[in-house]
Length: 268
Ligand code: PHE
Ligand code: CO
Image (cartoon, rainbow, N blue to C red; front, side, top):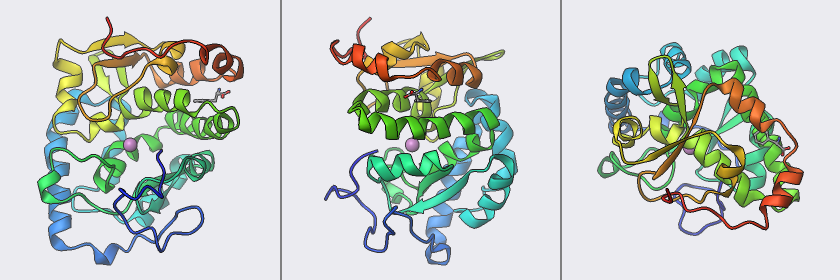
């Protein structure tokens, strides 16, 4: 959710359609790239049984994506049957309007390129590993899939209401860095956590970060840092709760919160 015309962005935008879709030229990936994807996949796979939410674990098994960078067309056959979602291949980060439009139409933008070997532990922009491993499995979950579609429609509405900064915080603290309370303890469902070699254990085990119960208005007001582990996570009880609490019309909420100061995520 950042400008695709940003000169600092990686990725080839020259062949993108007006909605930023590109072909995933699967045959162009090198053997080294497939091996690096496998390496990332295997490292994360050791962590997920302890740290990932059950919905994500249920779905990853169906994907058979541990052998290398997956073919999006293959995934789309099973994904569209499961929840009506598809992957849309994109060159990298894309602007808000096409991003929300894809989500509202049940298309999840997945970056086609893979990070470099020296970036296994940290990458500033989402790559195919983050987008695929972190985001795609949950699209098989009916409730999550419906929620994300509603989020996309909500994004187009927030653009009209000049409330993107607030709505982006909700995405950050749920879709990217969300935690969920389960019968076996706190688990991650946020893609930024699921695809992270370090933060996935940190977000559950480390005593330092704050773990607040999901609270819509607080989230809409809480700033976030993109360059380090989060100081604050928000914990949902279920995707049903996330869906329910985000269902009301945000128009009056935006109008009210607009006049309040933003909150520091590290504040007690
Ligand atoms: N209910 C929100 C609105 O009226 C839309 C939304 C749904 C936002 C789901 C986020 C998640 O703007
Ligand atoms: Co992401």
